[in-house]
Image 1: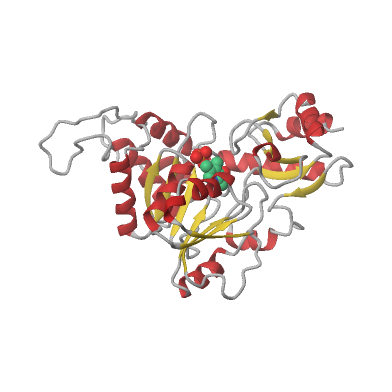
Image 2 (image 1 turned 45 degrees about the vertical axis):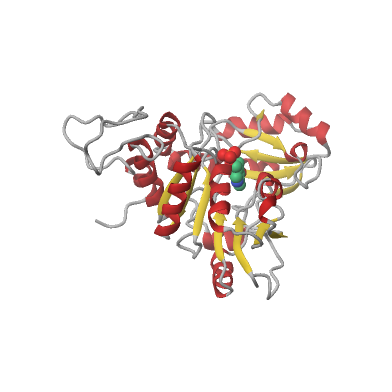
Length: 364
Ligand SMILES: *Cc1c(COP(=O)(O)O)cnc(C)c1O
């Protein structure tokens, strides 16, 4: 059979070969110990269980690598940093990416005395930028700025210098971008966002084609004890089935909203990689497989954003993105280095006409 499409993989991924009498949608397996006696079988839930294996198979297939599930996006990021970095190593992280990543490196990895370099997603990436670097972490499109960098080109350069390259693929999701195919060693994500998309679960994962690294991450997960619960895993697997549909509607809504906001007198700094004249569009078109529902813009100040949310009937203030509900997050309140009126808008799955009418009515 020809390679299946992403929508088909989202629906069928990880469900295995059906047997008569099996449920179409198996539930989570709640078990701490298992009956012993099968050397290949499960023995204790912290080391492995059927709920993880099913979702890891599904996400791994989409990512094109071996997937290790972790209890949150930060758990995925911290697991990779801890698995790869040694005392005194040089680490490159985006200066404009998810803020908790930089905080984790600064506070929790302080004892490693890392040489941490911060680079904006759009560079510049000087000739010698990868010299002596152990690990490069990219985030593209970046959160919250939605800037984009060239994964394939930076992977080539990082590898030439002997560095490993990891990509935080949260904003794109595994069906929006395949970092491993573009040359990255590691794709990781917060699945709390669009991958699960119902604002009811925290989860993360790491995918890699390096079996030895996957093994190390599994071992660290077992020994650290920070594991995803089977119910969260099952919720995520259930939600994955509609990822293709949800992203399609979110992108349709983002396109409609961006179109309505262009040229609006109260709106500046409108950015969405799907916009043909967006600075990130050319590169994003080349390496992304589809657009998501997150865009950004600026209103005059913090009060203007609060007033916008107050006047809107459909858009709620919340600090996450990629869910069914349209949400706005004023990023400056969390310490992101952006203007006070900077809004990250996550288009949900409402009807496009309703959203556009609501947003236009709520703007000054
Ligand atoms: C939210 C987010 C994270 C952290 O994920 P959690 O599931 O909240 O731990 C990491 N990276 C990016 C880009 C994110 O948006």
